[in-house]
Length: 178
Image (cartoon, rainbow, N blue to C red; front, side):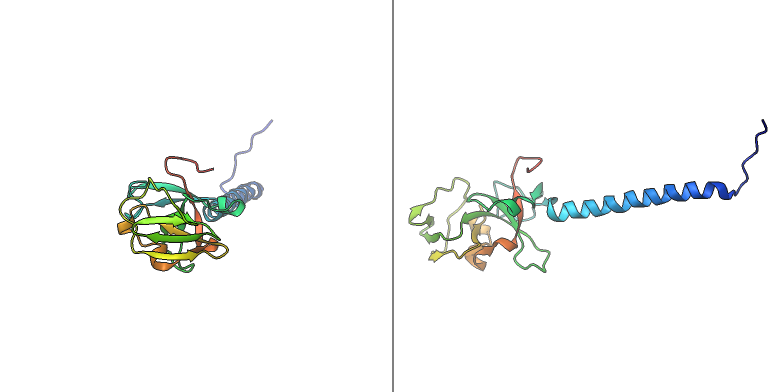
């Protein structure tokens, strides 16, 4: 049996190598596409830059945003949500859901009342001012406020937010939010 030495350039080996490169390009393409799909619709990473959620979320900490949850469930009172006031803007706010759709909200002398009952808020720091309401929340809107009430720009300033403006949910202390 006679062995033939491989030439520097042999057409017989080109077809196999091009299939390998094509396979790697397909893997790379689908990996990048899957990453951006998951980041946009399933889970993404965020960093806390504001002081409005102290002490629940400390500035500079990273957190996971569960973006899938509100496609299958509605926000509940006490959920910490990420919202975008202007859908064309990249500025995101992190706030806590206080009032749900259809409820009547009243802020009176530093206390929050939902449907005439005082809301107990062990997470809130500082007084809730100015006085507001009574205000009935329309369908698919939510009243959100930061935990650090004196340094928070929230629904007291810009009004209730719609479900479309809510990007996802944060669960402090959980690594994987599902």
